[in-house]
Image (cartoon, rainbow, N blue to C red; front, side, top):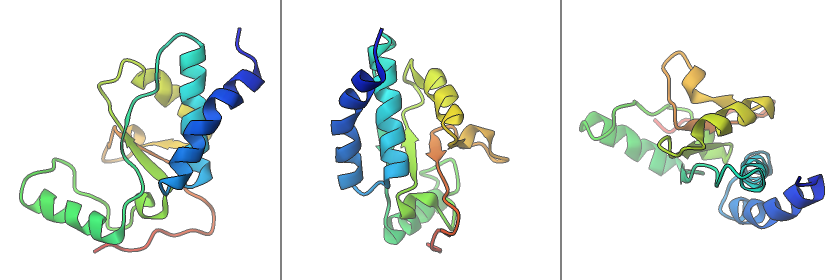
Amino acid sequence: MATLNDVLTTARPTAIALVRAGLRTQIGARYAIIDALLRLSGFGAAPRIISGRRSIAAQADLLQKYLRGQLSNKPAAQSWHTEGLAIDLDISSPTFPVFVHIWKIFGGRWGGNFRNPDRPHFDFPLPGIIPRRAF
C-alpha cells in the first residue's frame, strides 16, 4: 500500500511542471496528487490534460471557432482558464470517472455538473479572484 510520502514524492515533479506551465498550485498540485493516487493504486494514469491556462486572446479565439461551427460548446466570456485555475481533460480516459470522483472530494468543481454541462472541464475558483473578460 502506498504511503502519503509515496504519493507526494510521485506527484511533486508533475505538480512543479504544471505550475511552471502556468497553472496555479491549487490546480496543478491537485491534478498531480490525483494522478499519483491513481498510478500507485494500480488504476493507471489520470486523464491527459488537453487544455490548461489560456490567455485572453486564446479564449476569444475559442469563441470564433465556436461561431464557425468548429466547437460544440460556447466558451465562457469569463473563464477560470485565463487565471490558471482550470483544466480540460481527455474524457475518453478509462480513469476519467474515478478522477471526477476524487476531484470533487478534493473540493474542485466538475463541468459535468454545470447547468450547461462541460464534461472535460475541472476548476477550482478562489475567493476574491474574478476571471477577466475575454469577449
